[in-house]
Length: 225
Image (tube, rainbow, N blue to C red; front, side, top):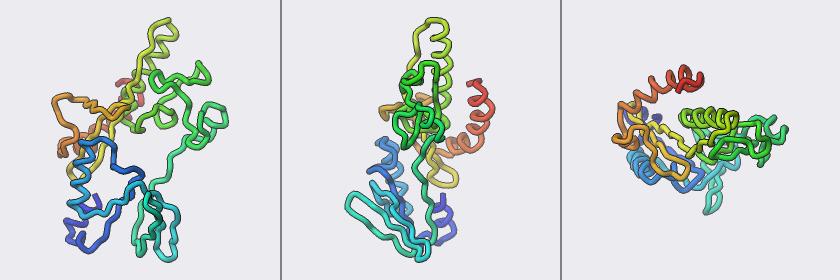
C-alpha cells in the first residue's frame, strides 16, 4: 500500500524499497507467489530472501541483514517496519503445556485440537501449535472442529479433524487484495469454489475491509459461525 501511495504521489522512482522474506517465496503457495512476485517487480521492490534482521544501528540509520549468502548492511534507512518472531503467553510454557518453550505454543494434536499432555485441555488460535499459518480467518473452522470434538468426547462420538485451513489476505494496492485460502499442505481451499481467490479483486478488498471484521467480532468470536 505504501508503494501504491508513493507511485500515485509520483515519488516511487526516487525511493529504494526492500522487502525481507524469511523464506524463499512470499507464501509458499505457487499461484499466490506468482501474483506477488509480479507485484514486487511492478513496484520495483528489491526482495531479500531467506533473510532476517540481525542488528539495527539507529544512530546511523543502518540495518544488518543475514541471508543465505552472507551478511549485508543496508545503509541510509529512512523507515523500517520489522515484525518480531511470534510467541505465545509465557504462562503456557510455565504450565508445561508447550512442547517447545521458544514459541510456547500449546502442544495439541493439530487435527483434533486436543492437548497431547492433558486430555481435558483443548486449544486453538494463535496460542496453539496447529501446524498451519496462523490467521483470524482460520478460527472459523477451528472453532467448529473444537466444539464438535468436545461434544463428541462427552457423548462418546467420533472426533472431527481440522485440515489446517487458513486464509492469508494480502493487499496489493489501495483497492485490490488477494485472499489465499489453503489447507495445511498448501492445497487451495476456497470458501467459494467457483471464484479464484488468488486473482486480485476490488470486491475481495471490500470484503476484507468491511465485511470480515464484522463477521469476526460479531459472529466467529461469539461462536455463531
